[in-house]
Image 1 (cartoon, rainbow, N blue to C red):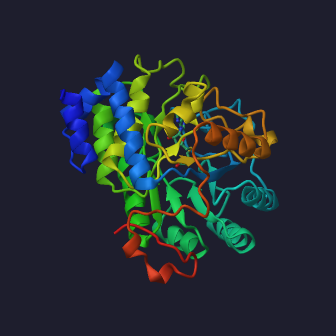
Image 2 (cartoon, helix red, strand yellow):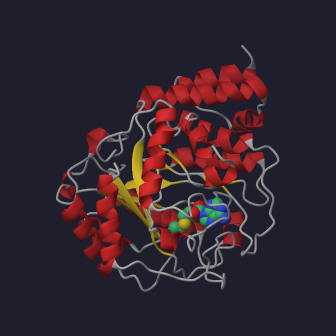
Length: 366
Ligand code: SAH
């Protein structure tokens, strides 16, 4: 057995890996690289089953007060036309999500200072009452008292990437935020009993394989219900324009495979940025550890204005087309569509009964 096989065997049996071992795996090429993909796919099949759950994403506002250096909708990008969908447009899109086979809607936006928590609560209550869908929010850092309100209004899950665990890099690319505040918000979400998702961008400027391995270990330490990671893609309208991709594209894929091997029971989406990296990127990732697909349900007229990175797929389509396309993808991969909300299976025995009013299913981490 070679070294790659030895480490993979250990991981497949629930063992841990040293930083240096993860770096070695990130360097693997050829047959060794395939062994990593196969091990992750097997782990996904054994722990999560064959189903792929759909989380329909609604990018409801591209208004943002922050200046994150990598992001195409940063306030500094004056070329972007700003929009905010009306409540009725969001609700109609959520109704479509149920028709299109999604058990969850993900509401994502920039850090829009004029979309109040009370407005979001009203929206959440309507979505829950009218559609019964699980709802994930991805709207940036919120104070704990607002998280409490959002949860009481029915929010099931929250996505907040830590972006990079390298605190110096974090500070450089986030002039308006601190790593500690993101961490505190993740901690609040966990204590309150949300299903928590986080993750990082793979290959930010200056990232070494050691730093990527460190991000994989940090992600694992957080014991997340959902882990969303995707390649960093440089946007021409940002300060990080012209930053190159990693020399070795397989590092992006191996990162997800290793995240799966270290987090057997987390939900892992095939993030959209993989399709911007390569035509079949999201399909590839579904065979290398991922079990979630997030069709874009944002109405066609807004999509072009929500380009966090270039080459974002499907900007000229609408939700119906994305919902059809995903069925074709899954059929070609021989993977069934998951039914129901696809809640976290991480801490099934520890669901918090006080949350039963908003969502009867299992929630949260302890
Ligand atoms: N305002 C929310 C949502 C941000 S957009 C928040 O701050 O959490 C969702 C994710 O897109 C970000 O967390 C980031 O990881 C990713 N993203 C933004 N710009 C990107 C880029 N240029 N390349 C790859 N991913 C990017």
